[in-house]
Length: 308
Image 1 (cartoon, rainbow, N blue to C red):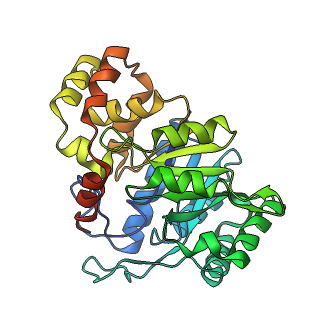
Image 2 (cartoon, helix red, strand yellow):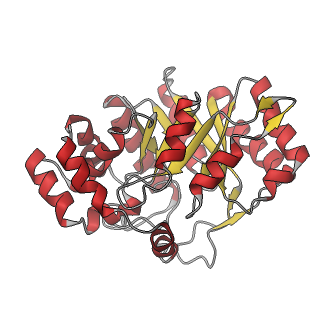
């Protein structure tokens, strides 16, 4: 299955996804969210999902995943995690700040040690979290060497992107080398029906032999909570929800290696996975392509979403 499960929405009590609050228990203490995460992971595994994506900043997502792996002992999973943001929300819904970004060699060293302490050799891919054009990473030689060294330990190195200039970041990051060897061989970018601007750069990355993961396939819930009429019509035609249509549109891209979904409940997970039964016709794909927003408008709206 090309669909992977991201744990951003269940590893911490607050997040920006629309349609999330209604799916989660009213009480979001650590043990409750751990149980929610375990149920999600069980449901995903039973459905055939074999890729799990977490991050240091996803609250206790790595801890939850580590505990679940120890209990279930599944040996056929691919695990990706990310460093570069630190969770500082102290498990509070009303935290003034939930995460802090730092792309430095010291931050990488600390967070890599933390990820390894929890997940050990289960980590297959370690990614820079939300690389942007202004990141100091691009000129930090010690950091670049440290990232490159992960490959010597058999860990694939990648980066995720955010913002209206994703395509520029993708192309620039894949040019980075240490001792004549590319540092990155994987990218995780936002691509959805409202924000498809990175598509060409992701296709180029795929053609060059790099792994492409797609995140925020539902536009943080916008495509589900208030689906555009064309999405609703196509969903009704196929007998699925709007989320399945949005995910199916990503699966229709041949360059999309792993397509991530980030549900908040097993019910949302089941609805998301219905995308595997949807084969969108060329005419439907053309109709869906008309939904694209200007990247700056899309990212401005995303920045305005509240943690809840």
